[in-house]
Structure formats: structure tokens, C-alpha cells
Length: 117
Image (cartoon, one colour):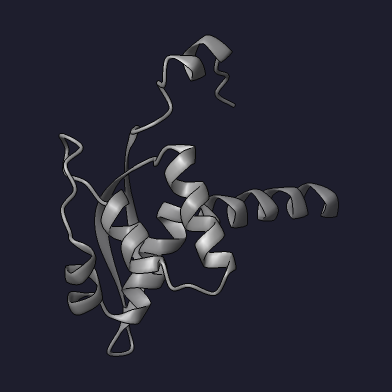
């Protein structure tokens, strides 16, 4: 388990961290994968997106476009490019990763496995 100091948080070291991962999605009945790089958005931005999402506003394409980056941290897609060029299964897989839902699912599976033991 990684441990951070509050001084690290205060210095902003968690914001904008670039993560590399692979997401899986189905296309034409086949399991596919794509490598992505994404950054952690600051609370101000992600909280605003969460609030809008909770008010039934569709923010997935905007969130994906703000989070997907290149190795230097520059965004790689506009919101319109995500809306036009992503298919639904890919968008769902990427959104789950950048939103953090994927991490929550993994943590729940770990907890479930410990309870069953």
C-alpha cells in the first residue's frame, strides 16, 4: 500500500499524475484492448463533473477528453472527438478507468475475497 504525507498532497503531487493502463472492451463480438495514458484530475474539476453527472447530465465524453493525455500530460482528444470516434463499449471501459470505478470494483473484489476466506 502506498502512503503519502499531507505535505505531498499540499504540494499537489497527486494531481496530474499520469497513469498507464490497458482497457478491455468488446467490438464485433471480440475482446479487444487499447493502451491508454490518463491523468488524475484535481478535485475541483472532478467534483464539478460528479455533481453534473449526479444531476443526470452526460459528462462521460468531457471527462474522458480531460483525462486522456500523452506522455507529457497534454490532452489527446477533444470532447467532440470522443463523442464522434469512440464506440460505446470503449467509452465505457475508458470512463470506468478515468473516473476510478475500475479501482473501486477491484477493491471490492479484494474485500469480498478476504471475507470468504
